[in-house]
Amino acid sequence: MMYLLGAFAVLQPQGSVALAERGLLVSATLLMFIVAVPVLSLLFFFAWRYRAGNTKAKYLPNWQHGKLEELVWWAIPFEIVLILGALTWTSTHQLDPRLPLPGGAPLVVQVVALDWKWLFIYPTEQVATVNELAVPVGRPVRFEVTADAPMNSFWIPQLGGQIYAMTGMVNILNLVADKPGTFAGMSANYSGAGFAQMKFVAKALSPEDFDAWVQRVKESPLVLDHHTYVPLAAPSAAGPAVYYGTAENSLYNTIVTKFTGPQAPAHAH
Image (cartoon, rainbow, N blue to C red; front, side, top):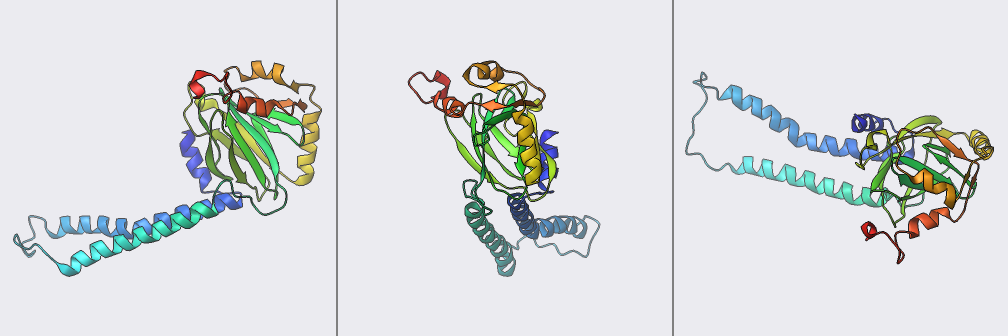
């Protein structure tokens, strides 16, 4: 059900990246229809034309080669493969998740996939949230994605494609929201018992509303540091959104490097 909802959301893009990805999806589908529609049509035509009761159909058991026919069913698919290859090549570079987006300096959001929740750290604003994300409309957002749990995948279908969250690594995803709204965010990689509940709310707010949201988060008395992070990282699912009015700057780097140093857990290697 989660993936089904995500598939419908992909067709309702709310950002330039998601819009380009939908265009690529539609173009590839239409190109494949050039082969699929005639093949399926001919399937029913042959079944009707060469049915046992049709005595007018020619029976040619020794007919083996038709140069024109072979030219058609080899040339057209070959050309479609070439076009799809060109689309894949260009779109791979144009939609590179690490490619910075136009629109000024990006908002940096550090994302940590936990069991089974999402932690968002705003290093410039020095706040953090759990299972709730807010971004300003029209401003590029640079997501720095890692994990402190089994490998996962970070996905906001209406804003852009997914990217993997892995321990000891930071994957970059640049997205932008073109319109205000509330979008579904989810895990796109099975990660255990709480996978189905590993969801979050993504809010695209006007710049003024985003500043007000940050101020509201700062009013929370909760502090996210190395000590309070330990119980937060413990497995739990379907938890409510949590605001941390203060977030320790070095916490994210500690989460990433804990899997790369000499004391890293065995499963990280």
